[in-house]
Length: 150
Image 1 (cartoon, rainbow, N blue to C red):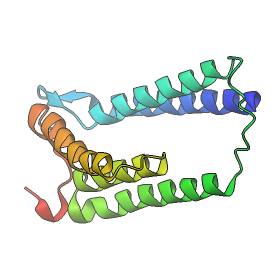
Image 2 (cartoon, helix red, strand yellow):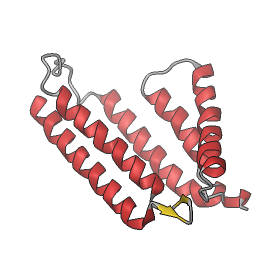
Image 3 (cartoon, rainbow, N blue to C red):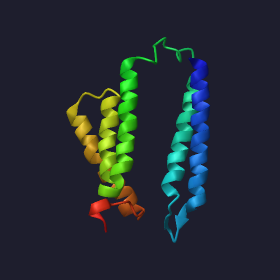
Image 4 (cartoon, rainbow, N blue to C red):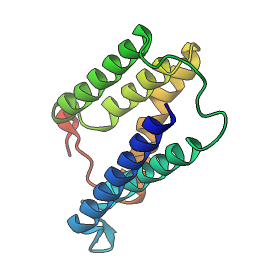
């Protein structure tokens, strides 16, 4: 299992680096504002950091918990999260980006084991509000707005 973690961690780090470099090529800043590459750069850096973390943890003695990664529940969670990601992509042109990402944040929390409806509801409200305030207002990034367009 440790070998698979190392392989996947390295692949994830490489993917993160590729995303960040591609985003930088799109233009990190334009006219004193965040450009189209701003978000991909930071998402790529995040993916890179997580890949490095997975790779590094694979060397610890506790890395292999002996748990079977091929349990039915894990496949259901994976299908749910992949389906949710596809739904975000499909809904973005219709209702914008911030609302589907908020819903997906709640779905991710539920899939990861959060049982509290209050916590999930707080995420569903907080994520879109934070994204809009940080990117839409603070950084003046044109976010896809769908039918709520500007």
